[in-house]
Image (cartoon, rainbow, N blue to C red; front, side, top):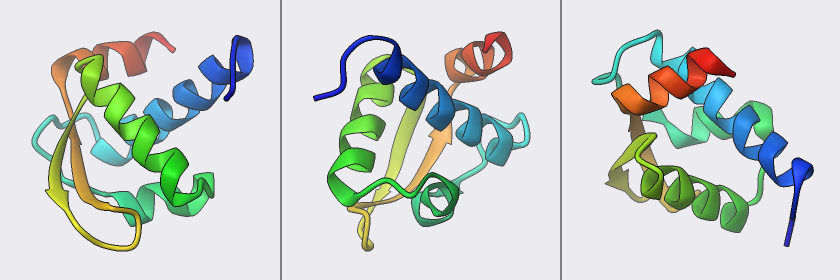
Length: 86
């Protein structure tokens, strides 16, 4: 388990990448496979991270399936605001 600032950095990196791939649009579907290509998280890590960000209201998980369990996500308005504040 990652605790403290390292934990925060990992989730911030993920949200920053999601924000970049969204191009500022809340309805743009982002491929989880493409998202993870730069981050290189394992399947469990990315699953847990995406579920956590969804619980916070920063993303929506849109499709299930594929090598990383989830196929596509979208960023929410709250997620965009958080992305811009990072």
